[in-house]
Image 1: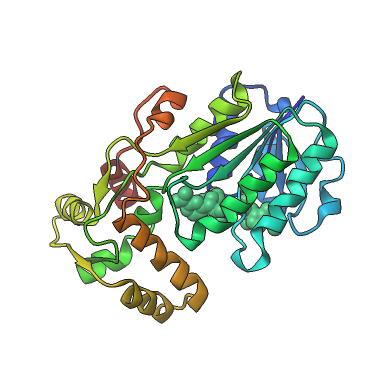
Image 2 (image 1 turned 30 degrees about the vertical axis):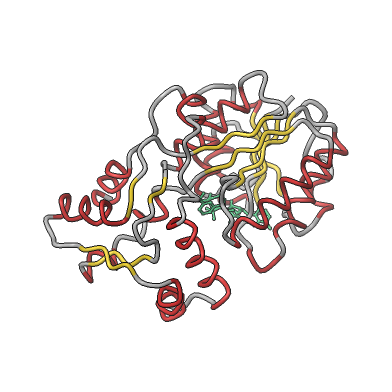
Length: 284
Ligand SMILES: NC(=O)c1ccc[n+]([C@@H]2O[C@H](COP(=O)([O-])OP(=O)(O)OC[C@H]3O[C@@H](n4cnc5c(N)ncnc54)[C@H](OP(=O)(O)O)[C@@H]3O)[C@@H](O)[C@H]2O)c1
């Protein structure tokens, strides 16, 4: 029996593997990766490395085994049909007879187009009849704090979310929840709505940035159309820009507010506040 993590060399996957290694022996952990060179540090620690690609079903032959607990980390190739990619892992898990297939999804309240792939994958996972756990991750603090340069340069946080608030947490927090589900008992057929403890809005975010940098940084609330134009202006493909700007419309409606308390319950500690992630990003 192994704990198997796909997308293991991504940002979230790295946190999951590192935290698993604090809890279980390395030989019980399998990292599924596309590029083994990127996983050399895991291999050096004794983690098993399996090379597979969501685009090639045959690469998943023999990767999963009966009794495994598997974390399917959603892919990031928006143009390649993520539901079909995720189906490849679901089919392989079904054929192997895994004990649990956990999937990193999006909040159940999110109606933005970005959630469509997640809803399709959830449906496929439920239809498979496998023991599942839906880890409906809210937004990452890092979605904002890893891209501080434009706000610092222009003295403005530009979003299209009006006065909307959202419940974010750090990737490490969501990874801790996944590790709790993969290493704990009784998580079969569960749905967790995961998000931070203290919701915040972009005016507060700009104020916190001002406080920590000593610079005047304002929140410039623009329309979804204007934000789409700004994102295409910095080189994003138009469909992706529209999808990302569409998330702000959902934030304004409160669709990324998470009130379940599931994240803190699973991890046994409060989530990382946005101010802490800002401080980490400013130091880095
Ligand atoms: N909740 C949020 O705020 C939020 C924000 C952004 C993304 N997400 C979702 O959560 C996922 C994890 O987040 P993250 O920050 O870890 O994203 P990330 O760093 O972009 O990681 C994506 C992972 O998916 C793997 N992957 C992509 N296409 C694949 C394929 N065809 N076959 C096998 N593996 C493939 C990547 O492999 P490589 O390492 O080889 O590139 C990478 O490990 C994202 O992929 C996305 O679906 C959520």
